[in-house]
Image 1 (cartoon, rainbow, N blue to C red):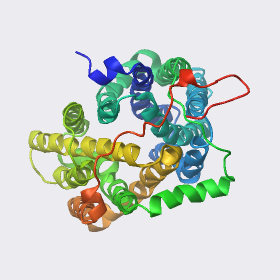
Image 2: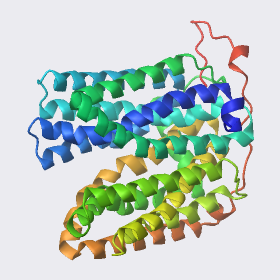
Image 3: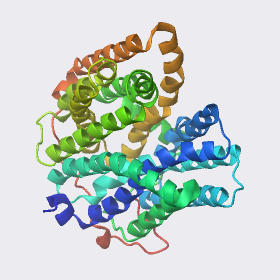
Image 4: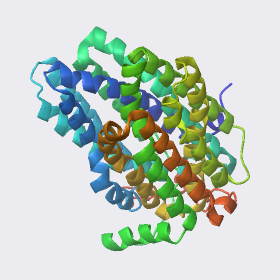
Length: 423
């Protein structure tokens, strides 16, 4: 049986279906793109450059995307972003299929993809609550969104491998481009709830307003600091050191595939749990889950047999999915709707924007002090940051809050061309 939020919330159902397919395509591309670079004669360094090109725009555009998403109708931003990403993936696919692709082509197109994503992510975070009519459906909606990422992480790489074998790297990217077309169709049919706002302030004032919303809430900035520690210090164990350790000491890609699959299954279990379990203090539970999530690094470097590592990573994955879903829910419950995208943009800058720093540094540090020692230190720092976050009283005691309901149905608002309601 479908979860109640999908059965009863038609607008969320449209948003979820379009994005779930798009996530599978994105996870597929994470496998396809490195092989696309190598297929045209690129080096390992070139693979890193192309991958980093997708993250770097968040550093420069993440906060701008948040301001714009709080000023302009968010659904339009999502449609525009999907169309840009459709075009970038389509062009990359065509260049590969026709044999004309060069490394700089893929780097530039990946950067364009990342730039569009910088606008999409804050707008999506602000739009999703407006597709929910019942407050108790908000956390399950976030859990389902997390489940789409978890499932995509399992299905996407497998599908990417199949498509590369059948159609080549270019054909696989063209399939991913098609998923954005489906997302656009779902978004065009979407009718989120709408709020009316006054005249927007100057751009700089809106940017400062977003920062004010962050710095005046100790539970927000303290959790953001813990998130930075997690993404910069802990996650490179997954993106860099884990695969290297598997190659050096275990069965290489086979061992890593077992761990990744177990992690994905653990994430799905957590998301299923969060469809029903509603902790009284969501952010307190999220901080505790972050401690568990930060144990990923030391588990990978534990020296245990591969199945034991996979079993413990399964448990760590529950922590990862729980802290993301409960953190997102806390933001949506407590941040004023008119500021939600700007506050969310700090979240994305602290995660996707900062992650390249850790990815670049992890390798040299591991070479200098040892890979096992580095993995242990990663977990120590990550857990310490999570404990520091939990020590903040406002994190521990933040209550649950009903979804902001001072919104009117879209059908009750004039949506004629001379008046563009902003959700």
